[in-house]
Length: 319
Image (cartoon, rainbow, N blue to C red; front, side):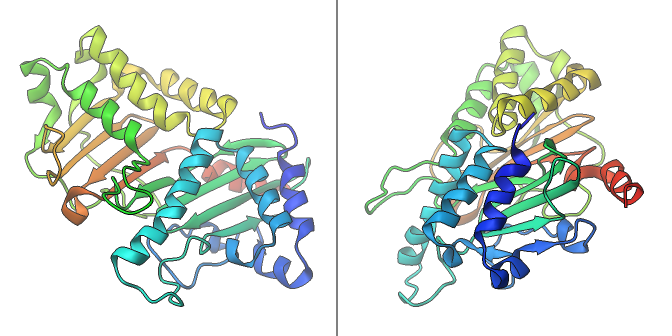
């Protein structure tokens, strides 16, 4: 899939000095690999963007581009820049690092090579991507979290920025083509949950899937639902996205469900939530916090989160 993925990782690792490398590289089978947090933290493992020089940062972005597409890279960078907006909105002192666009960490798990199983993580406030690779092939890319606070910037130099605009607008476009009968099956609660339901759990699962099934939708609504799914799946590079989509199709698109909670009109201050769930995937979107101007989105692969059990078993057999 990603020719040269391990090479890109090694360009980054080899750009680090010994002290930096000790902070960055962990064994593949460490419990740390399952750590997943998208809130501001001061104790993340790995090395932060703040600690990298320009050459090292460039190598980091090149590695990221091997796993996610250019548009997603732009979204990641835009989310990081929102830390400056929050710093001003929340009146943090200039020397305070609670909000800091450089407080995003890269951690390597295992030894990247064309012969090994390895992985890596890029994580900070509202960004968390977990990648697993077998040799030069990206085999897992979840949990994958992107958030945006503010969802829409209302003032200052970044006024009007809406990082997760597509995820918002395409969901409402789908909702608004539904018939009354389809809508009844889709709306599962008039109140949106305060947070994504899968949270940062090690195993993502939502029991008793709810909402309307794909095969209960009109052809027009089916296409709009697939357009929405595509936004999340194609956060990744095309070959890996195609692999995830094929997995969903093999499990049966008819088994996909779409559920909505909260406001059905797209208006400021009106909280809403939606979820796409199938045998292989859960996608969640929540916009409830900060007067419904604070979005959380996540993609969880029910077979291959954190690389999945089979990859870890394969790793242990090869050692």
